[in-house]
Length: 104
Image (tube, rainbow, N blue to C red):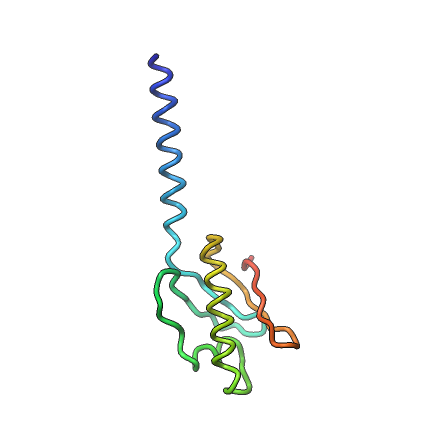
């Protein structure tokens, strides 16, 4: 009987620990493949980085592209937050798509 209580308590602690770990990620660090600059984006905030920050991190040569790239960057950040990935590297393809992967 005592063993069952210890096992039940251990399972409860383990479950609560993993739940806390999932909630612990509140921001991610974003680095562009073609730049050494990084940007921190909050997972639970509605604030977006400035267009200037996006231009600097993604090395945008045409400022007219910054708004669309910021939207794509925020989408990548949201995916990374949902998957609990604290650091990502993003890259742009020739057709303007923004992809991300965990930063190693």
